[in-house]
Length: 253
Image 1 (tube, rainbow, N blue to C red):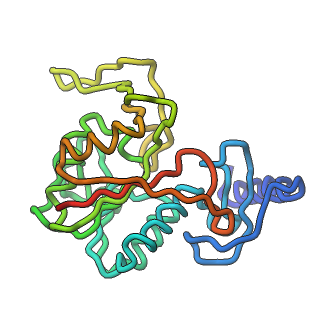
Image 2 (tube, rainbow, N blue to C red; image 1 turned 90 degrees about the vertical axis):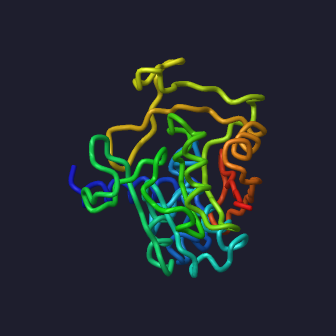
């Protein structure tokens, strides 16, 4: 299917949803325009979309959290591993200094591949204190060694810097569930049946951890020294509604 055909099909879905009353007007934090937010399916986290830019609620929640909690974020030096989607595009466009990266297995860290700098969150190539702000979007459910990754983010942040990120947090869990891990031989060990999410540079990203609300914040502080809290709002006028929309704000002392 061509890109034009996909857009035409998406528009048909939006028109049908709007006709069923599954839409509301508002202002999109991702594209900055007046728009219609349309429920194209029941899973709002991925299916409550901006008619203009196709953003979903977690994109918009992240940007609103940045505006409210770090209103000077545009003046900061920003790192974003796993650049993807309308929120990434807006941050890249408006930040004074922005570095977007992706991980490509087998490609040397620090190299440029397919237009992106190659980085591994387990072992970043940047010097200590290189950034004021690190942004990640739905990354930390896929990281095999999250302790190393959170510690690396803290290392490359300047004192007082922040890691602002989205990740699915499961309110019914009392403790986090490890679905996969790295074995002693370096290979992936699957503890539970494999599950994958969409990924911008591969056929799918393996889900490694189902995070519990209390566990995640304590875990971050334990492995990185950063204190963390949740930010959450429901606001249909900005297209923010649905499941797992917590934004985590971690601060380096």
